[in-house]
Image (cartoon, rainbow, N blue to C red; front, side, top):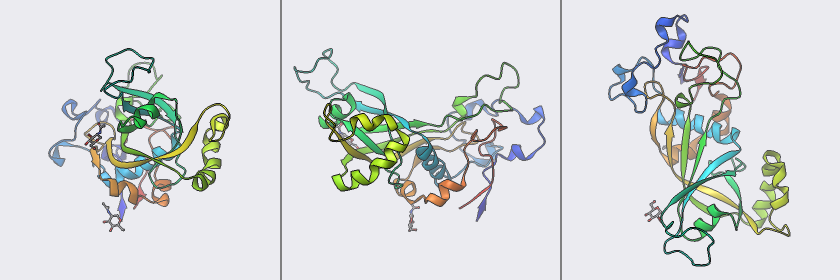
Length: 257
Ligand SMILES: *[C@@H]1O[C@H](CO)[C@@H](O)[C@H](O)[C@H]1NC(C)=O
Ligand SMILES: *[C@@H]1O[C@H](CO)[C@@H](O)[C@H](O)[C@H]1NC(C)=O
């Protein structure tokens, strides 16, 4: 089946009449309740899962969010009263298993992994950062120095960390080092830091694809997330992967599922 997830408006000539910015302010952060309230065809959660899996593959960094344990351990060198407080910290990830479960090199003394060891849940948030600036902006006035990040995909993977055994870790090492050559200094077995290979086992996915009149905003079924094939995420393109993109288009080309 051929789906076009091009915004309907992007098929029309580029006139200011089709450059509302944005179309319906009330639908910026949520999908319209009726499809008739949108000029665009909003992608399905599965199509969004495909885009998200591509973002996972192309994005080497993620913010890991965990919660400080409560009760607190007196031995910890940190302000008191932080039990239950969430903290988000950037860490390296790589899509080495192509299963939807990102690979992480966990350093035992790092806050995120200490919190997990103390029983915290964990989520990873990723955002799509286009490599190129758009040729056509949502707002036609103003300097063309950036894009509307509010109209770009971001998502959170919720789940738990699972230890990757040594044999599998040895298999994934080259992939991880391809993405993060500097991490060779803290590979498992190094003399300074205790580290280990872990995967985030994804249980839930929350996706904000962009403005709600043209992008899906909501939960993606974990089975849909896992079902996405390499061919599917290889065949889609994200906004701004290539020069000359138009900021208001959800997607730059047609794609097949
Ligand atoms: C982790 O999340 C689950 C819900 O998925 C919740 O039931 C549990 O209490 C959470 N654990 C902690 C330590 O907050
Ligand atoms: C995942 O794929 C399997 C096998 O093709 C299919 O039976 C199942 O319905 C899919 N699940 C979802 C949520 O798309």
